[in-house]
Image 1 (cartoon, chains in turn yellow, red):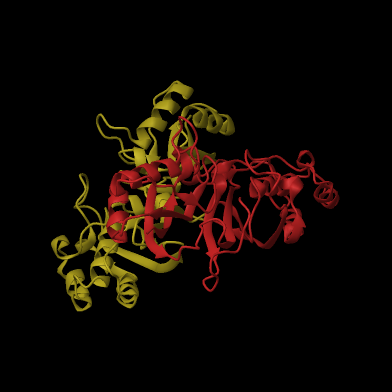
Image 2 (cartoon, chains in turn brown, green):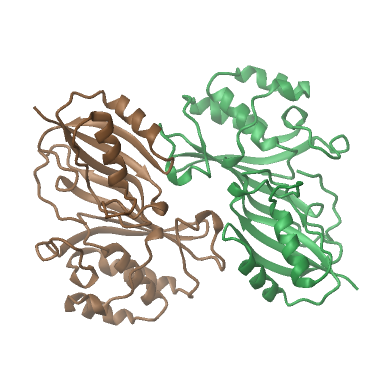
Length: 261
Length: 261
């Protein structure tokens, strides 16, 4: 008899090679998985909802694992937080139905991207926001952001990841891109049903290229329709990106198949 | 002929012993002053508006220095930022009238104090907010904060600093204490004409003790009137505190005498 557990966690991605296990590098998945193996004395695979890249942060990542043990979830949380460095915190572990899958059951995700616009980078946010010194036209920025909202084939804004790229459905729906003023710049808030590999960072890079007049606003539609990654703007750096929330449909049985990020 | 320059800077206080020079420890004042001496080839004293303690951060600290040289201010900013670690950024250096004094000319200051209220500390803010796990009564917290607004003798909320403590006027005016909800808790925003040594951290500690029912709200007036530091709550840790702005009266000649923080 196996039991499925859902884990909610936060991390500062600065010192990790990202969520996913990579040979000879320190990944968040790897660290937690190893500690879980130790605590539960059995082989554990920890599946994350979003494969955040090196330097990307998470206010709320979700993962799941199967175990043959009946566990005291709050004690496992306590043990893990004792073992982990302070830049990763496990917030909760809770029992879920066997059909739940951290990635495939997700019906939406919220990401934020922080941009520091002061002349010199605010030192407090130096690991948590992209410092942009180019002059940005805020009206162009807003118009460009609005363009991406809705259902589109986002091939032009997706990098190829190692696995399964061909199988992935490139049609995604972005529900909102809000632009919020912050103490030292702006925060772009993305909500969508799912995002392709590096899609948000490619959209942010393109929006910045438009706002700084490196790419003409008029070309945006052409870039989208071309389904060619080479035409869009540069991938914005990882450090400004936060996974803020993974959304599940509480009524569903968790079987709705969703794409990878 | 000496020239007076005003410097505006930001820093992450995590890795420093504070603003002020201390023997054998790495202070922000010391670092910048040494680089200025090197660049200008003369003895320089850098006077800060606020002597932020170890671990306290600054979004906008102000300092001034005198030099016999005619300097190219933007080149000095550029050189300093090249020499300093990324956790200190000089934002601006500008000529000021000879009567200007970073500390004595200030007519007000704004400080923020961040409190993380999630069950586990948000890793992103682990160096920038106090993690409070005690259950807080938000109504009590708001009432306690409101109590401090206005002009009072704050002796009960001032630690003794090394120098000049006796000479300092303990009567201060707090213009506002706003409580702002944040992604993981609250931020207390203080604006006043000046603050005594550790006064904000002592007020925050006391407000938290009241909100967690360790100190009765009814005793607050008694504590204030007693002018006795021993009666108020514990000093809240440095890491949640930010110097956000030093306010000057642009019309004044900069001679208005103000107390030390």
